[in-house]
Length: 164
Image 1 (cartoon, one colour):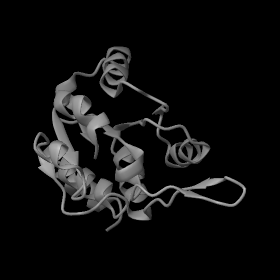
Image 2 (tube, one colour; image 1 turned 90 degrees about the horizontal axis):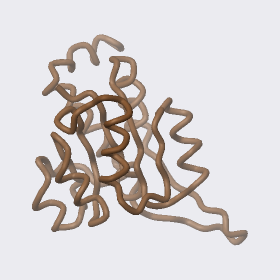
Image 3 (tube, one colour; image 1 turned 45 degrees about the horizontal axis):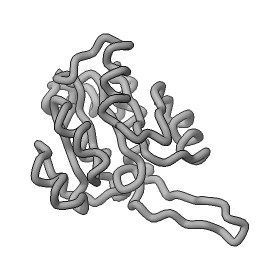
């Protein structure tokens, strides 16, 4: 059973685009459907972590808004960060699902119990994940992933009952 979902940001929670204003302020676009699934995964008792290679106040704000407890930014070795987190919260790698889209996610995705990549993830990542999603990064790929995890956990009906 999956207890922890690990999210990459750029290319998974977003479409991978980074927009800078004239004053060098960065902006990102998140999908509300992903946020809905994340919040409701938490309501069902699931844990979440963001492990990302970049650092952004925008990501910090989004994690806080969604109630994501574990946020790791500017990470060079995502697998090592996850291994330490799992030790701290006493969860095994088999109880983890993760989504990533590029080579910096490769080792983490190879380590977890269930791995995902958006439809536009890089080919080398597509070759090793358990599931290539139908949606692209930033286009509710995280929502699709969470619904698959919920179904495999036997929790999809509970998820639906939160709203129907």
